[in-house]
Length: 568
Image 1 (cartoon, rainbow, N blue to C red):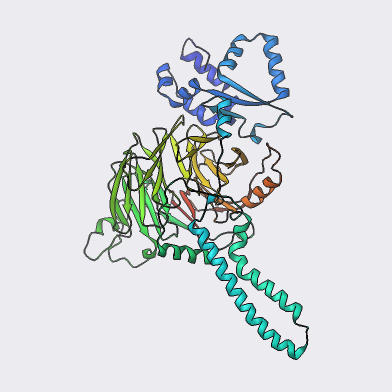
Image 2: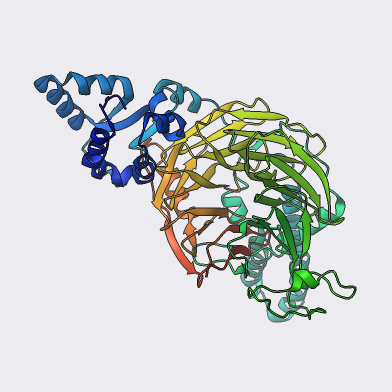
């Protein structure tokens, strides 16, 4: 960017001559720059503006750095030296040269100086779980109940065995102790063993936000889910329920699934939001289902008849394409965001729009409820993320700092932080109380499209446009597991309830399951090595016939739900 050309012909020749050198790391950026034909194009392009206003950080080993210095001194390349001083920050590391593909953080565009980025990542992050959370109380109650039940059964067994031993001698003593131990493990191990290994070991923190009260019926529902939760690991993989949208004609922009999988929502280009109740899917239709001339079902047109009912609930209110939709944790509310720069809150019980939130100035790409409901976060083309509460029409906090669109947002499990992924190829972690950026994660080579938090709150996974998945340690700010996960955009990520597995869904029409437990266990054993990474192990790839995966979610019972639109 520091070289001046006399005309577009010379600039084009320069671009073509050196393009191949950067294909591996910056193929998408090159595609954008290829259409630049005049200085006016540079002024209008966000990428060009970022390149001109910020510096590149490049990692080099000592040997390569010495060779570069020798070359510059020998050739007296003053022009190149000027470009380096103005545009590049070198990070020199000890050791032998390594392949570019082995280090996702080898070249990165940073909007701040290296020292400031390091300073941000040195701030303290309380990554633990909320103290006295609903699920923790329910898990404790369930564990105590199972233990008491096991001890009661064992006491009855001991009484019976004592009667038998009085007749048959003392041979039953050791056997009774073993029986008691086995029963206790069988009764309590199902629900507590996995949590103890990862979640129960996590520190507890106090909430920074005022949290809503949880209704009794919701607590009972959570208790029932925990009682029936399947424990997953690298040998016990989840059952998967995949919801496929048919005849969308490329009109479906997003989809989401309720926590228990009972409802599925789709956001469409015609500004509509549609919610399907899974309990009603497959029931005999009371209206004609003949095909129209264009091949689409006529259910929508006939749904207003007196006898008939739509197979979905239609929500209308937006004035532009809907790009994101999300259910509240208990399914009673629904959020949607649109290119009309608004966010709308809907009631799934009343089937009505309750609030229209206005604050963003441009399209809102993503919106997500907090784990406890009531609060939600949004991400927009205006390069900001915002925190909202359902009872206020203005945002509570505005998170500004990204150099390009904020494409996705995700809450931390303790509700004290949100993470944002951006087209500037970085992920940031923000404090919801202060609105301050406390972590900057640099390493992706394309726009970040999806985020997920581990159940213990320590790790975060991010997926990008090139199919790369990276897992980050929030406490240190470094990448612990980089991998080329898919062949196309990673649109959704989800951790299992105990954190042993990570599921990823992609535009390459596959769902993949990754072994997180083994990777994090090895990492903790080797925690002294600051630069150590341990790639996630692929457990299973689940291909769809021809359906890109839009959304993934683990239910509280550890059933994996997925959704997407059939691509014809």
